[in-house]
Picture (tube, rainbow, N blue to C red):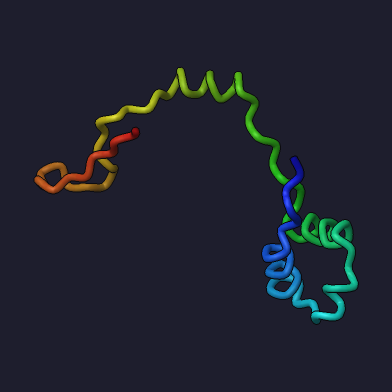
Length: 84
């Protein structure tokens, strides 16, 4: 299933980042806008492969009872992270 074109994000980038006038923005094709985005932001990073992610999770498992770093250990109002 195809997703609708992200017009809000395209307009935000065209007007806010590229500082295009409305007539210049609306004359651009989506492909031209895509190339402009890559020119400014670079190519999107390749997501981590699932086997590599699984290896990281085995090496650094989540600890469900850890206290957030930087909080005073003597403070009774410690915030504990609970993943659910």
